[in-house]
Length: 304
Ligand code: MN
Image (tube, rainbow, N blue to C red; front, side, top):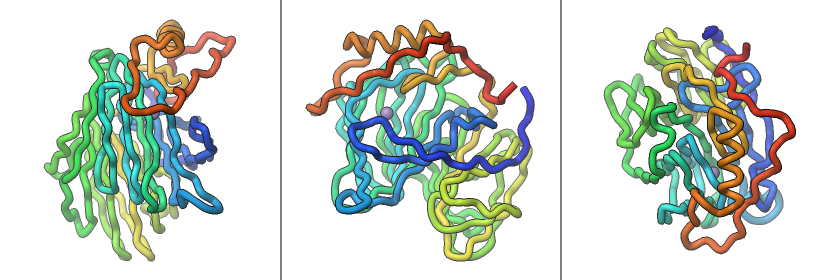
């Protein structure tokens, strides 16, 4: 597998599937790079009010997933998750909602309350040996929170400096929120991992690069540390992991390996089998888009 160099992945604005136009800023998958570790999808949204001019509430009715974990992380606001294994779980900033779709699950997410909505949604590809497991859901409050070189670190998944998240992961990876007061810092990195740093809030210069909000700075393996400087303070999300060497086929809400698997997942959803019914949710489910006329193919993490 070719080894990419350090680079900045800029976000593109896309509407999130739902009944209203909630715009998200997506950095993965990216033309230059499709995964960072097993992370295959990175969306940053908000901060935006839930009512009035410029409002962008989150309204994502029941829809299916398979072959991945969804990671919901908030910087402000409140969201309620419901799924087809019976979970009804509000989430607040500093808490983790982690849904392991495995062979198939359906869920919905709606913003609630009155606080501006600001957050990140990640997908983690499950390795082939784990991707057909039964679906399950985890909620974690009280994640490890500590200071590392004066950076406030909250460990969302994996571990940082020996501080471990209780969240289940299925490949070597890390996800952590970093909060910086104005100043300059050094962030040590795991040399076995490639990493991405997303600027969620504030300003930051990463090494020599001024990062735009929602942009993701990529670091290849064997990067020992990065320098971070912020004038007004910053909140960053660190993701990383061992480069994911399986080819993935991502279509709509499914992560698979073959065209036939996608066709099956789509028809199972449309036929109301396999994914189950989201509890306590009267919204009409999202319908799957039409399959494209071409045969979909799995692709490597790095462009050829
Ligand atoms: Mn979803």
